[in-house]
Image (cartoon, rainbow, N blue to C red; front, side):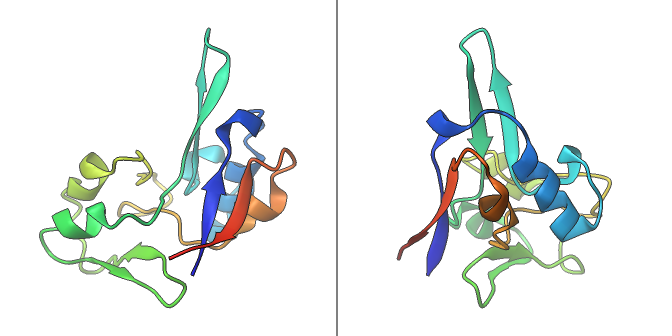
Length: 130
């Protein structure tokens, strides 16, 4: 399976990854509805990129088993099953499960690749993996 690799030292903080992600997945253009997070760290002068690394911690803590793996290998939250308890959000070691008015339940990267295809700084790339 392929997975997305983050090279934070290349990130310029432009948020293009977030804008293309929200457009691809929610049909809106705002970084606040993205499945990837970009957090500026100043005065240190770098950007933290928060992206699901498909580690399965969220799946193990979900009390109603609303998280499964889809055909592409991405962990996904089943909306009708999710009780919105926030256990997955709180347990994510990458801080990569998000909430937004664009979705009635938490969400994470679904490996659509919009962010990789549009990252001008090449801070995101595909790699073959486990």
